Image (cartoon, rainbow, N blue to C red):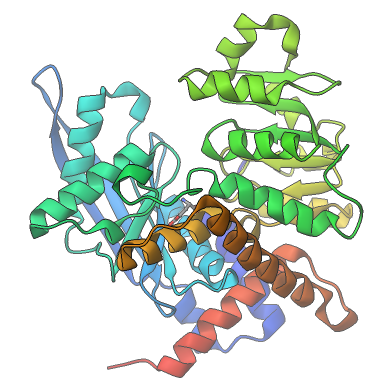
Length: 420
Ligand code: GLU
């Protein structure tokens, strides 16, 4: 049985709060959600019928600034998931030292079942419903599972048209042609590589390491490609449709180029069957590799499979891929986990750069974006490993990351005070 991600995220919070001796009033404040906005709205479908969709935007905490977080389109999305993911965004932004609080939102829908026109109608109507919540100084959406740069373009346009002028800073992750940032599309996957390099700089490098990547969407595909380019050997790779294995290393650039033209890994394998053998999806998680990168969805590492995980280093590219139970087992077994709120902070960090550029009508080069990204993530990594050393009583990177995040948000709340 997989626990709800909300239970796990709250349990992690309380664990860190206990270790820190956090004052009860902040404990209660930080386990409250500032705004939970839910809406049911109609969308006209291609066949002339009307369907009602359920959408939400949850703002967890705004002590550090305007709130930031993705918009997820998924058939199994629940309000508890959105609450959990918004809390993770609060800690993630704080750990990266961004001037943002945490939020998350989404619509209960499988976007693959919609035509492009229906997806646009849904996005525009949902954005109209969000009018009182979002804004460039208030709450700034971005892509997440099931959404992309095109969805952000529609959101930006809908919001802008209702205000009568273009407001590019209302969302991030837009196409570059309309004010998106260079490097934003790749940022989460690139951040995964940077964190991996920061971790391995103490024990060699990515070169020659065997890696298993679960997920071949925006995050997993870019992470796999950049790890391959850095000399890592991606022996296991999977998406929603197939899991693949090649002990000599999968042709990641080939798979990436094929996927970029709108295909999945199963179709790539059908086209080049000799490139890899098909394995059971679960085997990607328990593969005999040095590094495991879960880059798909939450709660995939569980109490059931954690004892069989063979990688000694896990980099959580997805949000919440490890249940509390699995986390305890993996810690006990001495497996190092770079936690989601640190490992995948590259996305929101370049979102911050995009927001800064939009507000200044400036355009940074990709080299500048990547250089600044590395600087911010290196600093975040240092803060977390310093907290993990815990004056000679080491704690896990997850516990340390939670502590850094909670400390920074609590400090902001304390300085600001509760008003009125
Ligand atoms: N959806 C991404 C995340 O979970 C990015 C959020 C953002 O850029 O605001 O971190």
